Image (cartoon, rainbow, N blue to C red; front, side, top):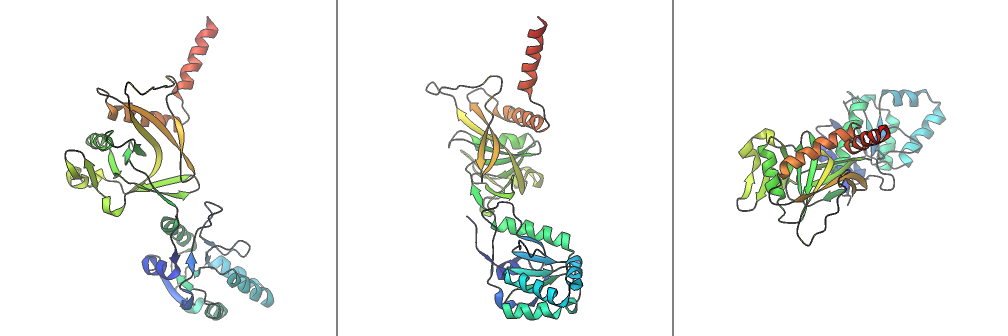
Length: 315
């Protein structure tokens, strides 16, 4: 669910690092910043756009030059259209002196109660920072029960029923040099149309619960390098037990690779059976290595079948 965020809240939390300074329109500080829900991936912040206005309109040197080249009536009309779109904020970038801002902007911002700010940061950098921070705050979130690990450089979510041994497996992976991102309830957000990133809720950061040992502080035990703050989710590994009452029908060539939707994004998922005597940590590493090969365009099952077909054709 998206969170409501006012311009005032955002400026209070991020104004200093983005070098934002109020210039006019302070009475509009309760305007809401929000992501367009119907079109995922549409930027919240962007360059001046009078046709499809962004919630945060950024004006750099090029946009100001464009407006200044317009005739008097066209210039006035462009400013009117900009403010009529009711942006959450208008920000002048690369501004060192508030006197560089056109008085017409100041007056219109005060009349329409539109937050008008300036920043010394260049347009490209400012928009990138605005978009990154706003998506982090406003983007849809999903909590998934499991353990989120970095295994061989990629984000892997371990899922499965309670008691299957996810935390114990995470502990073994840690001892093998892999890194923890979040235990129990990793939080995932969509940072781009096809990208899901996960992190730990603040309360659970650095901690891992292992049955029989209780709560462990992974950072204290394994060092700072054992923890990763955030990572892109690239693979889900679902653990399930094998029992006499469970029928496992597995494609022995292609395995159990399928797709699972997380925040409307398809994420590859592989199902791994857990049974006494199986070294699941080694199997996880093999699954990750195989997935990296797949991402690079190699499919072992296809390679095997092509080799088999070639031998049959030569007989």
